[in-house]
Amino acid sequence: MNILLALLFLLAAGAGTGVVLTRDPRRQIFAIAANGLVLTVLFFALQAPDVALSELAVGTAATPLLFLVTLAAVRRNRARQ
Amino acid sequence: MKQWLKLALLAVAGCSLVWPVWRIARALPPFGEPTGNYGPEVNRLGPPLRHISNMVSAVNFDFRGIDTLGEEFMLLAAVTGTVLLLRGIRGEDTSAAPDIIAGRALAGRAESTTVICRLLGPLTVLFGLYMAAHATVTPGGGFQGGVVIASGFLLLYLGEDYSAWRELIRSHIVAALEGGGALLFALAGFLPLAEGHAYMENTLPLGDFKDVFSGGLMLVENVGVAFAVAAGFTMLFLEFMEETRSLEGDGDK
Amino acid sequence: MSVLPWLVAAWLFGAGIYGIVSSRNFVHLIGCLSVCQSSTYLLLLGIGYRWGGVVPVFYDHPPGTKAVDPVVQALVLTDIVVGATVTALLLAMAVQVDRKYRELDPQKLRPMRHEGHQ
Image (cartoon, rainbow over all chains, first blue to last red):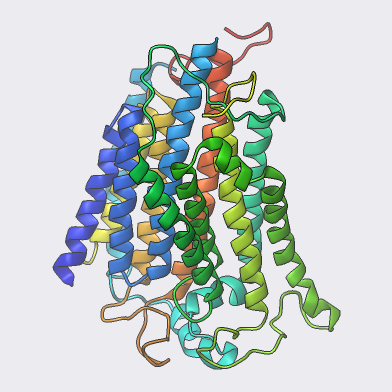
């Protein structure tokens, strides 16, 4: 359990850095979804299933969809002007 | 302010904070040996006092219920702000035809997507309802169940066209559910006031341990939160999707 | 191992702030803000963890078993859901900024002046 938790924390740090370093917004959406998934596994390992359920539904479904539709709306607005 | 100046300031701030952060990290209790007393007390006193087994729900809806009332209204305010911002410029008309941008290929929807979404969408909504209803016995609750229900509605959108989805999800009903859920939560606190107790004190019958109908007032608050969160997220999806619809005409896709 | 969670939380927060300062696109900036938020979740849940503790839901194990802290879990739970709606509000503002100025680059936008915008 010691090693597993340490590795999960380091993986969470890596996933967060990946979100920041991905500059293109369309690619950042996948990084955000991956970050949500890594955080879900970490919260599950920290004995917090309620939190893991919230983070799973929000971080992999709701937030990437909002970003996607925002990018689509921006593109459509620019095409119309 | 120039960009290099911003980055230089950030570097200075970062370097000057490295040593304090290290000192603070050493001064915090080591990971795995917490020194607080509130958590273990809640764990010890929760089941006999309130007859429920999910301590996280107990903290959310009973021991710190007014906190959650504040969070609930924060959610309501954020959703209202988004709707106002987006509808203020666009207007209240809705349209079902997506805007076509010239020069981009339009991929059709695969049939397997429709089949899988039709199978999994209602199942996900049912699972979300189960999770929201069993707040006091198993991991779950209004917040989690509400978000799972909203993602079930999203699966339904992926499987059908936008116009078919709009037939299912009408903005008036969603808006009513959202406001109604928050109102139910706030009014649930007034029930004990009518009997002479404090606001949001748990005075309903508490039920048996490990039974679904345990926890008293927590169940009512839970239902309110589940409605508000599910409808809030669905409303957000709706408003953002409407941004990509065309303004003139209403065909079908 | 005993200070790793606090250092990871500090690193994530610093990375998020760096992303916000050096961002060239508003939507990317909002993604970095969510990284900052996730650092606070890590910190809170790390404080509540106890070696050998079980889930604070006493359904399968009897009440009285040594469990992790439920108070911080309750805080993080509501925080995640409300944080997502605030992200949606910020994204709506980004859409409006782009609609008005046709520009999503924070470094190219200037504060508004009296005699109109530029």
